[in-house]
Length: 327
Image (cartoon, rainbow, N blue to C red; front, top):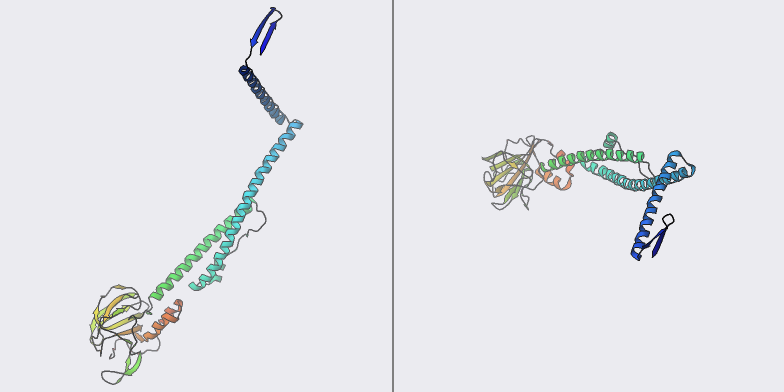
């Protein structure tokens, strides 16, 4: 392309040659300069009109701001609805947890009514309606409070259940001889050595010499000695004035002061002392009074754990503990 520029004053002319590349570049620069000028002008006019309140510009600004606010409000509403839905699901799970806690509290011996009246229950239930931010925050605060209360309730029930478990382990319901066959039972009988009527103060478990003798419950060894009537004897204190006695052992594996676990091997069956043959003589004493050990062994199979401790109460006095009878 040839451009001829003529100067009328100087009566001169000048020819400019533009190739295709230069022409495109010149057009691009011109368009860019026009865009910059238009953008600057638009920006200046728009800001000036917005500040001074020009009718047309002011209406446009209001429309833009309104649309922006509507988009922001719609975004927040969608997020609030999602949060409210999740909160409703959490509340439903809390209600299920509350129902489960009431059932477990019965097993733990805790009155659900007393716990409910002390701690309170309920709270704002999230439904299908939309919530405001304040309502959502208040509901979250209620849910946090209820969560703390449920934690306290579960802690109380855990303590009660643990206490029941400990009491159960301290009551002699474990058979002292694994698979042992019961021989002489508790009560009056004819003494096998002198033929006279006498009170048999425990249970006899005939077994082969060396058979393991197991602790009927956890406790502490308070006596480990040789007795003329009981032979090699072990006594374990289970607390609450409850003691179990294991007699006629051939070998004793524990000593006084040892801490014993339920089912632990403490001795081996023998025929020491006043005995007619190898067997374990097993006694249970409550407050120094002989009890029928069979009641405790049966209680471990039939009675709930919460009632086992009540089984360890003395009945009618059978015989003083310090008066050993023939075996």
